[in-house]
Image (cartoon, rainbow, N blue to C red; front, side, top):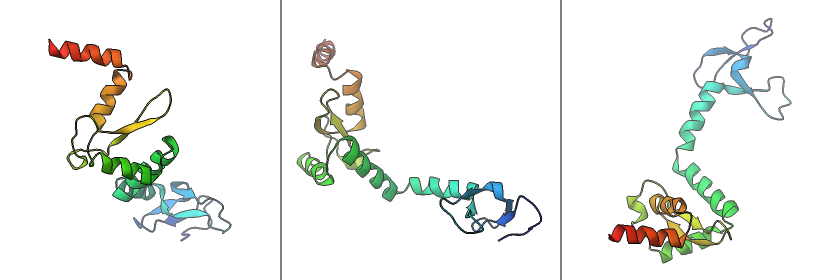
Length: 146
C-alpha cells in the first residue's frame, strides 16, 4: 500500500509487521510487470521467515535429497536401501540415527567418487582427517593398542 506518492522513495506497509517503510526496505520481485514490483513484506520479515523455514524438517529433507542426488549421484531409493541394510546405523560405530544430532553422512572415496556407506558425522570426519589412508589408520590402531 502506497502511503506517499509525492515521495520518490515510496513508503509501503509491510504485510507481516505492519510497519510503514521506504521502498528500499523491500525486495524487488523478479519478473514483476506490475506498477508495484516490490515484495509485500519487508526484507527484515523475509529474512526472519527464511531463517524459520530453513530450520524445518521439510527444508532439511529437501537439502538432503538434493545433496544425495547431485553430489553423490544416488537415487533416494539407493540411499534408503543403504540405510535399511545398515539398520539405520553408522557403518563403523553402529550408533543409530535416532541417537545422532545430524543425519548420517554419505561416505565416499574422494579419488573415485564411489559411495561406501552411511556414517555418523564423527566417523566420517575421522576418516577424512586420516586422509582415507589405510596405512595411517593401521598406525593409529597400533598406537591405541600400546
